[in-house]
Length: 438
Image (cartoon, rainbow, N blue to C red):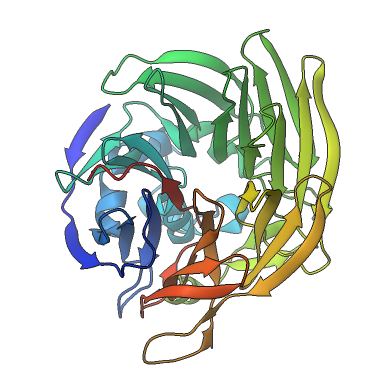
């Protein structure tokens, strides 16, 4: 891989004393300007041990630019005789035009903690990822050498200091835009941090838009999810796939049960139980000026979202229960954790609702609404993009398009609001980390 230094604007800020704790929160967003809501990346780092934070701003143009040589090579192979104009006017995933496609590939999506003040910012699906060093206040951009592009997440084995990474062939992915059933060459690899030698753990025909990867505590099961949303000739969404690898017994299974099976999380008490989120929505092509101004895509909800609970066994995955509600739409984030002795499930429902369910019986406990109650504009509806619980299970950290908030789960009240004024696009994944060493 090639490593580049990235020009970044870094602004520090202080936090009030109330949200103290020996942990930090990292939130990747897209931050708008007066020209376009897609103009910048903005990564927010909150350190609740020393009551400080900072924001890293990077030009979205610079994120795109450093992967363009890889992109040109793939496009020249796939479309050897096409002019640049025809490529710009072409249709890609979900019927997107080239600008929409490039925007979704290069937005920040998830965070991986590397410890010692370093964090990976994973892009949606592009040739590289960024590493922010909170001690040195630097940003590096890692770019792949081949035509495979990374999935939206990486997983760190903290004991062996190994990164599990997903990638897939962009050339195959482009063929899938013409045939939604086209099989895409995919792989899962791992490598030690600061070591360029890669070990290939699995390779096969799985999917493009590999979106999430997790490994359970005893390193037996590796789970990878795709983000589908392709439709068949009857306009029905083709179910997304989940790949389950039994690393100890050298077995594998693929589940094609969920509509948009984007994310997974292991149970905090039983590492053989896993939860899958099924978003049940479809991206749609929209007016490019509308997309650039709103920093969001048109979405067609195909019914309520759901969370599936599975038991992983040596004979394969077994479905246990499903959580859903009639008004649970676009479930972008799900977390399972202990709150005052009860194992609960917290999930986002569009546009600004939090659903709380009992993770044992998968039944709704309650739901509540997130509002903005700070700043010049006062109380106003917002769109919730991502949530993450505090380590003690008492608070939810919530990022909206207008603010960062700390919500007390028991009272459902906002204890802290950092108003961000400009609209932020944040349909992604923040991280709560025990790393405060910065």
